[in-house]
Image 1: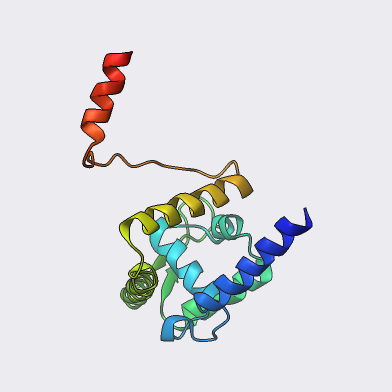
Image 2: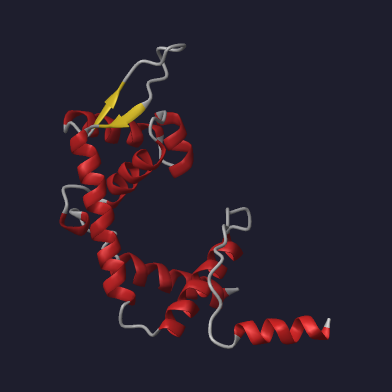
Length: 166
């Protein structure tokens, strides 16, 4: 158990440094990591209630409220009264907020691309499998989609061989 604990903690320290999670200006933007993540979730789910975002992200209500207020003050989001309940005000991105969310997403994709770009295709596949396995082991209830890909060299004959055995 101690070995597993030490390994997870060592990886956490490495990865937070590797992705710049502790930077006050995440990826050189005017957001920190928590704000960037909140912006990402709003962009993915809009219109979305703050309570839903709080549940999804596991953020303290007060911290969430302060971030939403900052986003509103910066002109990144708007909150409109819902038709049925004035207390529920769905959050949507403004044009400025959408531009910022897209910019952060592109910067993050470029950073990850640069990070894994030096790996061979086989090493990238190993990384994807390992990260997926770690996520599923630590959170068995996590949603796990799958992707069908085209067959690689040798796989069609392998499938035909296995089929003939059956």
